[in-house]
Image: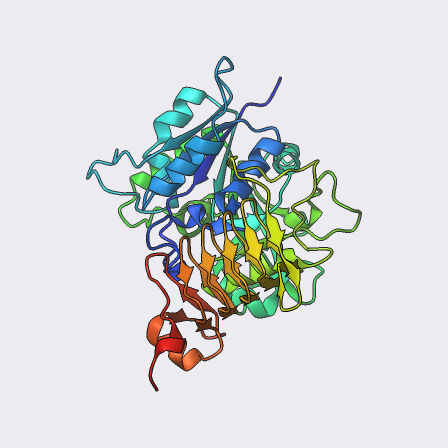
Length: 418
């Protein structure tokens, strides 16, 4: 019997800690790595794993996400079991409310599961940067005859207070959950690591439907998988297992490569994950043709580097430069450039994440900054060199990352009278 698996991606998060990048877009639609969006990672994982029946549940500020899905992620046609369909919040609850939690989001769309009649439902978030062969997790789920399998990543115990921690026995059967508890139990036979939940779940359909209905009828529930449904399944002695993400193998990756997973929930974490891409041998490999990272296709021309004069040479060092970029005598170092970025003569960009269609003026200097789409940096402006001044104009994180909103134009500091 061929296993039928239905994928449901939760893509409705506000992403408030990524503000202002989420001012006008949902977190899964935030650009990443030059030409991609955060949601491209989970969608690519599904498609590369052979899962082609996917619903994407949206909610807050979903327009840019819906546009991205329509431009680059349309599959299907004759084969009715191959589709990627965005599902806006239908407000199917009795009170006609927005989704009240992850479990409520699935319950309000329970008809999609009933109509599809899958054997297994894969419920994954759209907020993380990672590569994962979900077929391996499904195999473990079936071998364990599990009601539910939770993807888990080992993290050092000093980070236990940051995660929902899974307590397991020696067979990785889940026996408890500990929410952001610094004294959470260690992984058996480990001296210093705990299992952190990745927020990705596989459910056998019958058990999922029953759990959703029971949870919806509970007036004391917060209607969340991690807080409500999974602990109740453990209390009822259901067969729930943790899947160790470190055992996951991606085709085309070199032997001994460590699995990559990052929670880009803050501006600093987002900047650091982008910076991970610059290395000669990056921890996140975008160039594995056996496990491609898919996204929308745009009719961009190739990137171009112009001029070769001293002090006026278009160059990029240890950087990612996307299609349509023109470096006209400017210098880019340790940075990520999105589509259609212009860097003019004498400009210097270092340790930056520059989103699509930004324009860096002549002799401007930008360091340790994130520029949202369509930002225009005037000639001679400086960003990232005087954080006291930057804080008057832009958002600056505790670590000193300057974020320039897409609908604001930086001030040309050279014109200010001191």
